[in-house]
Length: 116
Ligand code: DGP
Image (cartoon, rainbow, N blue to C red; front, side):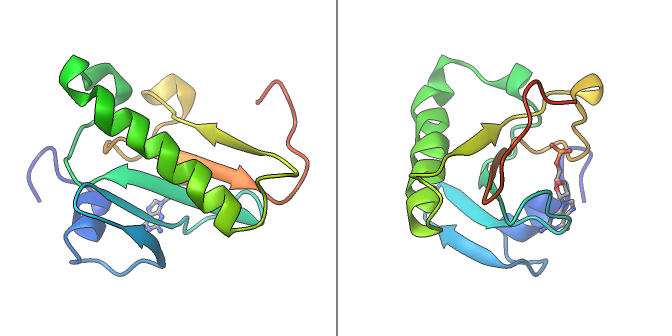
């Protein structure tokens, strides 16, 4: 693994097993190993962007696609109508532990607001 490589990079390259629910040329989505809700899916770009701080205008389409895939998966998982939450944790104080940009898709139960 390089300094910028992470377990999510390995999952994106098929080097580490994950419960994949979606993939295309740019994006991979898989179930979280430590689910915080009945539906907890991580949507990642194949490209290893470390945090939301590292995106540029060139990534705008990719960022939009991450959310579009989240919405598509919410429908597929049957939580779109009840409601769900998408979260991007950025850096330590927000609780980011894996430094490969990812969108959490959480649903299937009532979610508290504000988050902890
Ligand atoms: P964050 O705290 O936002 O960086 O979220 C990282 C999430 O990744 C956390 O909910 C647990 C999950 N996770 C960590 N390692 C693995 C792994 O190897 N496989 C899967 N499927 N999920 C992982």
